[in-house]
Image: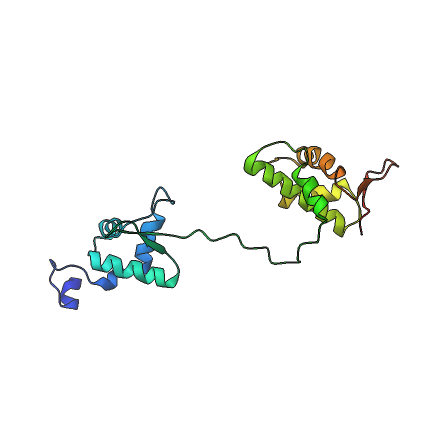
Length: 190
């Protein structure tokens, strides 16, 4: 016995819109090779074998839920895409106040790389400085254990990381290294 007898439709009638769930529409977006490519209602229609109206209804429902975004691209065309979430600020202790001179020094620090890699290395330097502010007397092993894992900055080993970050950290204001050979780092700021 076929389903068509159960729902009162013959085998040649189009499937019910109930079979075209929002989850099935999302699966079309997830099945793309290029996740950056927006889709049209035609793309969804072809992938699911549904009507234009059904595709539009489900796409609009997903927009209302906040799962998709849409915009017009011409007089009668529209595209839909999965939005990329914005970077959220970390939930945790507020960022420590830094002297503007420190930010200038971090921006001018002699760190290898350029573009995004250089920014990640500056972030690692900033995190090391903040760590030293929170732990005013510490050794370099603490930086390797507590800062490097969260801020590898493109380095594969902690030693490579420290070879770049250590000298740059030493050049920042209010940072001192003990002269007694114990490799203890001191934060001398307020």
